[in-house]
Amino acid sequence: MVHIRHSPQVGETLLAESTHRLPGGKGFNQAVAATRSGATTRFCGRVGDDGDGAYLRAALVEAGLDASHLTVDESELTGFAHVAILPGSGNSIIVSPGANSALSAAAAVEAVEAQETPAVVLVQLEIPSATAEAALAAGRRLGAVTILNAAPPAGVTDSMLSQVDILIVNETEADALGGVDRMLGTDDGPGSVIVTLGSEGSLWVTRDGMRVDVRSFSVDPVDTTGAGDAFCGAFAAAISSGLDIPAAMQRASAAGAIVATQLGAQTTELSPEAIDRLVATRT
Image (cartoon, rainbow, N blue to C red):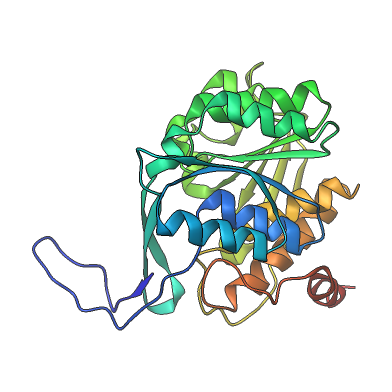
């Protein structure tokens, strides 16, 4: 993660104002957020047989996750992301998937089925599309609520969406997938869609046309890199606890706001109690 004054132009070399090395990845961030929001979480992923892989495994265990389904690839490096933080807390991200690109469908299904009766299966797309779809399908078979964060959206297929109860996307991702109305207007589309809108909050749209807006919480952001991942993880935790979707969205928005006040995509400041306190400011 580097802080820069502006995005570099072609041929331009920039000196970063500061540099940080932090554990992350969408799946990692979301799993940690789910755990810190109160859920018992099992993580499935793949790392290289290298120092970064050992670093991530230790970070998972320290965060309280079940890392028994974090496998090691001896031929690929651990994936990494270059995050450029711009003034005003905006960011751009370049991801090199590394070993994540070798996470097999069989490994994902095994992780889901090991839970026996999972309440929620949350999937993102920094893994192969076939692996993501297999995990969602396994969750469906076991009666779990299936949630897909379609980020990045390039690997989304209609057959994948047919396995999704709740799709979470930001505005850019929604546009890349043809828009909410198109996705909900097909037989193979998701059950419903949540669009995260940054400082404008989030929007839930159902197949019968119902639309529910949830306002964001006003905070002074330091780094918004992990706010969307925190939203997804906390939302999954809230759904697993039995809350309805609008209530879960409110807790997810609070989690995203808490994470945005700290540097990096994860913070120990995130907890059920911290979410409770922020949500209580609305009532």
